[in-house]
Image (tube, rainbow, N blue to C red; front, side, top):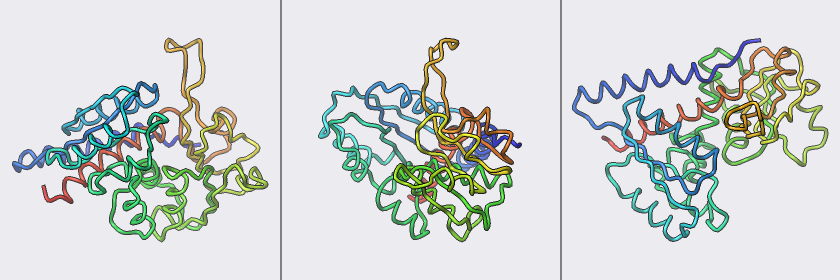
Length: 292
């Protein structure tokens, strides 16, 4: 079993991006600027956004963190999005999800300028992704593709099962892995809560992408010998042995599944760091596409 170390792989990407920033500075060119909007105090969102800000600092990007109470109105948030769309200093920005229930997430996502949509969630970018046109790819699926590529995981001709059909991970992941590319060229099955004989389908997979948000969902009896397992899950569960009182657990029962795998991602330290690395890649791309 080989651990797909997202932390180490993301560190290599940050080193490359750091050099790109140094080169830009030496050439008298602009440094990428990422802005992040955080609404409320959701624990997972706070941790994730802080990690993005830290990555910007390490690489040398400029970053702006805009915090708003969860009482912000939809109109006020839309006004903030419009302001960021028109700020020439901001190359790319994200509005961290989830948002409070009184705000329409799709409406906010659609309001973001596709040229600054470094999360890759805007319908324009999703549509271009489907057509395999240049665009900002959704950060988590793109990070997984980069992780597979940089660790030499063979995907061509493999049977892949993606568990979960979200617009953020599962659906775009299935599209990227089925492309005529490397990584890619998989035969992909997308399973979800209505899938019949789900366990049997998963057990036939050479590659499993678990993105369903249910801790420990993928058990050893669902994984065949030699499978590649990528765990996207990051659910907080209670753990009195930890100072924080909680720990992260993935969608895969790692302790019992790992020995059956050829490759497997840990949680934490697997997909999470790669998502942030992809966001940084998109931010640099956004600036370059705007001719800065």
